[in-house]
Image (cartoon, rainbow, N blue to C red; front, side):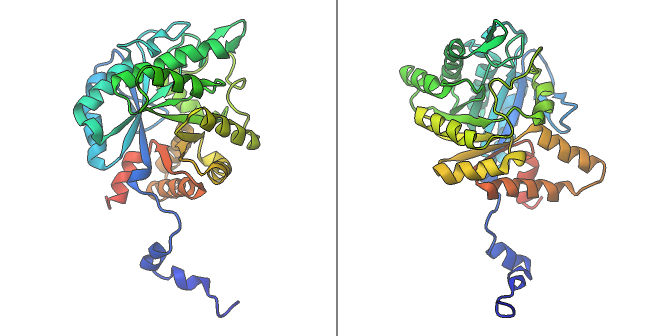
Amino acid sequence: MFPVRRMRRLRKSERLRSLVREAEVTKGDLIYPVFVQEGIERREAIDAMPGQYRLPLRGLRKEAQELVDLGIPGVILFGIPARKDAKGSQAYAPRGIVQRAVAEMKAEVGEDLLVITDVCLCEYTSHGHCGIFKGGKVLNDPTLELLARTAVSHAKAGADMVAPSDMMDGRVGAIRSALDEAGCEETLIMSYAAKYASAFYGPFREAASSAPSFGDRKGYQMDPGNSDEALREVLLDLEEGADIVMVKPALAYLDVIYRVKNEFLAPTAAYNVSGEYAIVKAAAEKGYCDERKLVMEVLTAIKRAGADIILTYHAKDAAGWLDGG
């Protein structure tokens, strides 16, 4: 009781505040998303995501080394193929863009960088949906085989971890079985376990040319009003063999991150998505906020909610700031 308990005593200097800080972001928490596009010769700016680029294949070795030098432990790759078809065949082609991208990065930095690959069909299908589309709907079970083939092709190319983001039922189990049968039992699965049908994905869909050409993804991605359902989704993915579970988006779903971490005590990732990034960049460009302070507050909030791993487009800047830059 006051005046015996004065809470401000622990806040009076930065050294004291640091000493008792409960959640703190480190470079080791961060994963940087990278877009690699087939058929381009130089990097292309992404208008909706200032500071982010679509990279050519030949630029990936330099990118990988930069991330290692910054102390960022991992990258997640998103591929943009030169051609698309109804079944997204370039997603699982042995010489597909992501498969070659993995090989390039691993050839440059080896085990110094965790290379994670997004496993989905939306960037590769002509219709932009995350699975086989027939009769006005996305077919769940026929899609599983293609997702499993994609994951195995990534693992064979050298990926350390695959990250299915499609939200088909049973895909983690299908991928785990396929990886094990292919001799890739050491390849980890980071599942987009609780992925919401969110408006925050808009800039990403521009970057990856992955917007559905008709309809939406509400039939397979989660309703934003549901958090109990997220726990059921996460439980199923863990039972099917997921090593890490993810909540996406992050900032608008901090309560879900908190519930998932506290319920399962499993390694938990959160994706600080493109729309969340773009909002911060737009406010900073207008002079409405201090970008550095706002970014670090956002990342700290995600960490405080329970995330062990944060996928974020702010990773490079944050790593520099954490080094005192």
